[in-house]
Length: 107
Image 1: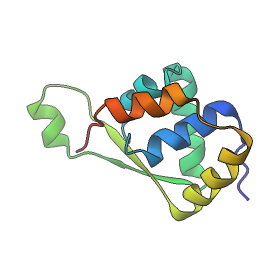
Image 2 (image 1 turned 135 degrees about the vertical axis):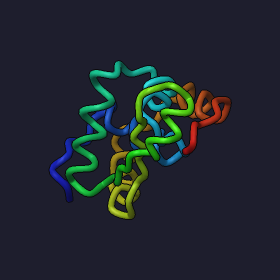
Image 3 (image 1 turned 180 degrees about the vertical axis):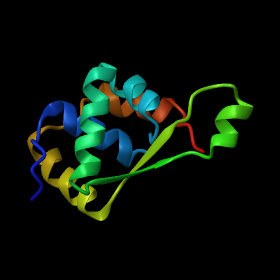
């Protein structure tokens, strides 16, 4: 198993990724965690091979006159880690309901 700690915050981020929220701001929004919590978790997940990240095409950001976005996706190992984490920390029903209401951004 990876060196990432199974915490409630990490589990929320994993749930968000599994539900199609792939951009950091979307994950912050759906989990209601602080960006200072979400982004370090995303970096750890990526470093441990539990998530993969990619930068969007610079032309998209330029056309929309905003900073470049990084998009994340769970890897197979990340999904297995979520399965384990979910047995320890269940996602709050409010998160799951909110995830169904919000529409994730996609590149």
